[in-house]
Length: 278
Image (cartoon, rainbow, N blue to C red; front, side, top):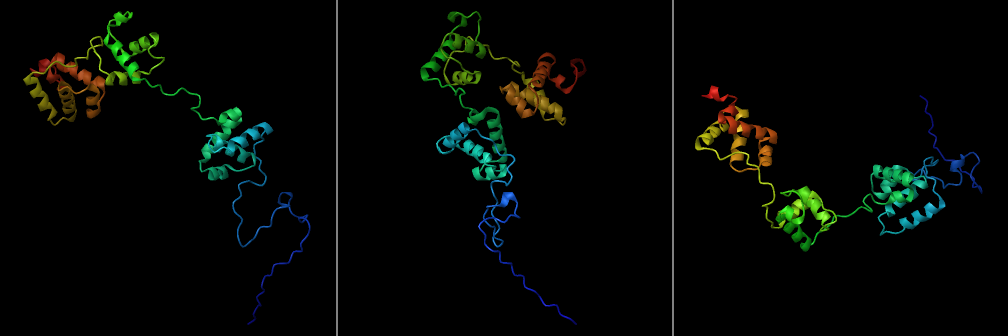
């Protein structure tokens, strides 16, 4: 039996020279040697950097000034642009700024399209929500209580859209949304004498009709029970939208069932004609 002697690998001693070896690639010359014992950390800048942004000198000066101001909202976007101009990758920039890669990508796209102006926030320059003080709210409620013809309008009843147009023409407000106007009228007391009356969906039910609806609502047929339950809810004073959500049906369906009961009686809900029910 023969034994092969083990050879211990000894690294060759490289003589120190004044410059990098000529055999190294150009992009590795002049760099610090890499230790094999401790792997090099992930570099933020790629070696060839083909995607690096080309910045004009004026843009770079502005970006550096923005990046150095911690109180400016555009400081982060400026740092992203500067890092990309130095060849940083999207992942490296996202990790450094603690944002998503898509955020970095959108910032770069805005800069390429709009320059420095693309770093402004999307809501910058937009009008903020208007606030109305107590005197303006009281005036809105007062005018909503007046007859429209008394304030030189050629219609007899108000609506939210008509009142909004009147308020803008009269100079009470510069602009106001329908939802804001509805909210103000909901909290400010006013007279609704000149507003459309609420729709009467169903006249009061007789005792016999209510008993028939209860029987249908407790029946075995789920669809007929749903119709009868919705009609009973509306007859008890529930709002149409609330009933539609509770019984999982459309408002138009409820109105159709109410018409059947009003014109033909409760038996129509069960799919029977009045003659057949008799």
